[in-house]
Length: 215
Image 1 (cartoon, rainbow, N blue to C red):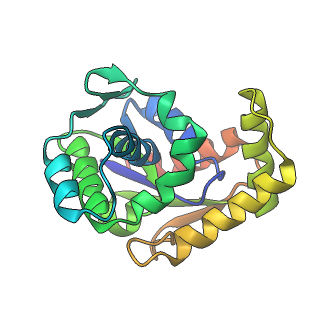
Image 2 (cartoon, rainbow, N blue to C red; image 1 turned 180 degrees about the vertical axis):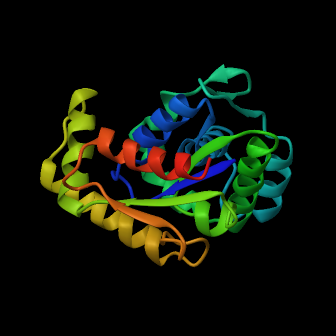
């Protein structure tokens, strides 16, 4: 079974998807982390975005492993490295590249083979798994999502501004929604859940109820 959870940055996708995977005993796939890991590896090894041939050759033999616990690059856990600002600020641009997009989509599909999965991202229900068993689209206002992201950054020791964080969310939404390749959008048959004024537990309960109604 495939449960697709899409939505913009800060809507609670990762937290919700991870908890649902734990409740159901499914594999959790964080597609944002996969794109971050690809971006990290390309930057680390000096592969330029505009060199299509080098990109294709590199990605054919990339040593990238995703598990429910960690992401490994060349045998080393890179969970923290892919969350650094220099990677976060470039991942959106890298994810627009058609070579990277194609590789990541195939990578995600292979992870789901012969597995029950909960996969979250921005194009899971529209591009990666348009025939997913269940599709959900989580959303919230820019202000709410900005405050959530701001709190996460503050808790991790980052010196950030709330207004700048909210504006960064707006910019990310604009970039993700207007890109030519696999833009952020709600699948026509997805259930939309506004998380602005409800807690994570309520969101999880709602999704679990939908899934179990079909059991």
